[in-house]
Amino acid sequence: MPRAMIVVAHADDETIALGARIKRFHGAHLIHVTDSAPRNELDSRAHGFQCIDDYRLARQRELSAVFTQTGLSCVTSTCLGISDQEAGNYLIEISRELARYIADHDPEVIFTHPYEGGHPDHDACAFAVHHAVDLNRALGGVRPLIIEAPFYHAGAAGFEAGSFLISDSYTPELVYQLSEAERMQKDSLLACFTTQTETLRGFHQPVERFRIAPVYDFTRPPHDGQLFYEHFPWGMTSSRFCVLAQEAEAELQDLVRRA
Image (tube, rainbow, N blue to C red; front, side, top):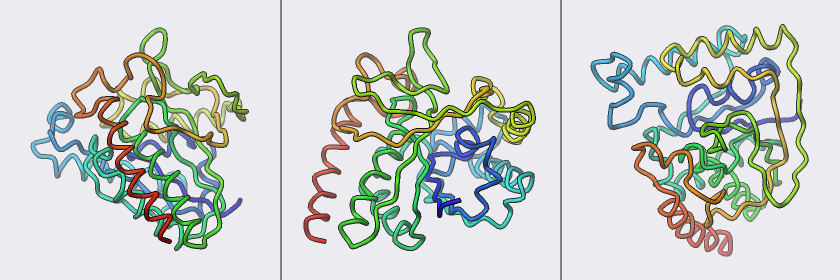
């Protein structure tokens, strides 16, 4: 295994992307950008928790159960502590923080989200990883390869999971057909996230897909039409995200020039 870093938005995203092969990542550094607990408490109350702190703790315990089941209890991990659904408001801060972790851990590959409009935190992760890599390179570091796995986006039938957006530029992908044992393992890991049972129903896929991340224009929406997350009260719209991305890029590019 190459030196690897995994940068995802929420606890369970690492399992969605890599659940069938996550046991191989015992030497990786895992970063969760958010605390997996929306500040508005709609999720915590919907799952029967009296307060957000209890819900946040439950999410941490679910992730710990995955670590225990996979033998990754000693894996190094970090949570940046951004509130769930709010990562898009902190693009500069997340990018700079990730650049520091990249410099410290010197990964050869980084696994993360694509820019697909499924969840604003996912798109914020994609933005931050790409710009953190650029910033680290400007400071003299080696540029790691960015590998992404698909999560979900708006499709013809609404929710579409497990496949990359179709774009004008062809990007090769690797498709791994899961064996029965791998599917059982992944299903078992997803089951650790008991608070997310309903949400994760659409992620029991028979394959895992990966590709080298393309060059994105984060100042434009990832696809035409309404993005999937715009159907929900998550405090973000496509137009607002693109404005935030444009503002953040200007400041981060200035940092790169001055590096």
